[in-house]
Length: 320
Image (cartoon, rainbow, N blue to C red; front, side, top):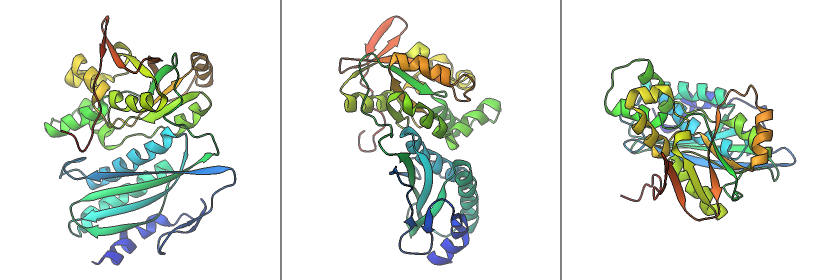
């Protein structure tokens, strides 16, 4: 099977949606899109490399979910509505079983996240998956990393550390049970907090999605805003399955620096916190206040009754 037959069989059927501003999609040199008046285009790109981001025996179906979920999470952090996807695949060979499972997973994830595939590229080489996602946000209303101010509350969605726990179950080949299944699901299928990102646009002063660990990512908000951070480790939202699997202490460490949770971390004024509570009495996504923004340039974490300066930088591909 050649490159063009591969695209035609496994990916062209995924790009049939024509009712979301797609004038021309798969099959031309470029996609042609219509943008609604008064909106701005938000674009992000993510790459997963075998051996760096996933193990060689990772199921293709789950990899498609993980790739798209991680990418759409960036749109959620901007308060954007997901619209379109371009996909680049580097494959060591044409494995039709793998491609069938991957395309089935991509179809399911695209429907779940309301994203249309509009083009991409395929080439030969070490297994590498790249998704570029495009979203829309009302002009001037996108959430940014800058804007946090001293006294703002720091909040996160969901629970933290689960993805790192899921990776651990894979590395240790843990026997399957309810907790292990939950943690692996959190690793393979991150849940982009799109609706929550749009909910907090009227309240948040800054926002980021948690891909490299809480302590590493909150530094980006601090640097962009010129502020400091204090996080109370006792207030971190941690799931019961993670605590049962690795214990309280390890779970708390992974909540701080485990990475790839793809939850949202955002800041807001204390008065806005009260207003946000009134907006979400039955909101399905947990939102937890875990600390505050300070006027210093330090990142500090409270363990028991002691504040400690943190030098955790988050994951970086080009450092030891």
